[in-house]
Length: 87
Image (cartoon, rainbow, N blue to C red; front, side, top):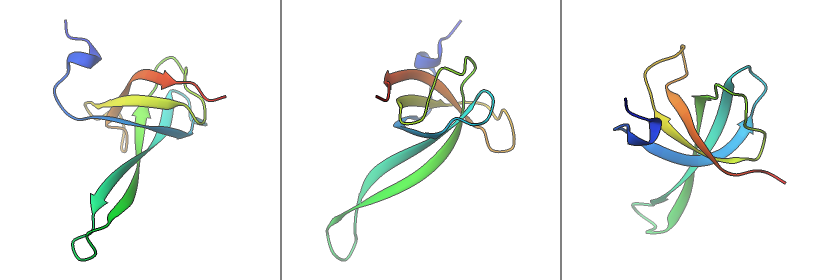
């Protein structure tokens, strides 16, 4: 049996921006992309809805999520671990 860490697919780290839904968190992931004309790094932000089966995350926590099968209309990610709890 494979664990979530062993899964193939993308893994992302981000910050929890919402934990209001039951067993669901919204994670904001920031990536740096080089601007094609200005040659300057620009911050891109995207929000992902992830499954949190134990409701262990809170707002501001830094988490690691992995790509997963579709669990609902928008949920295609699964919580792997909480890297850092918010103060």
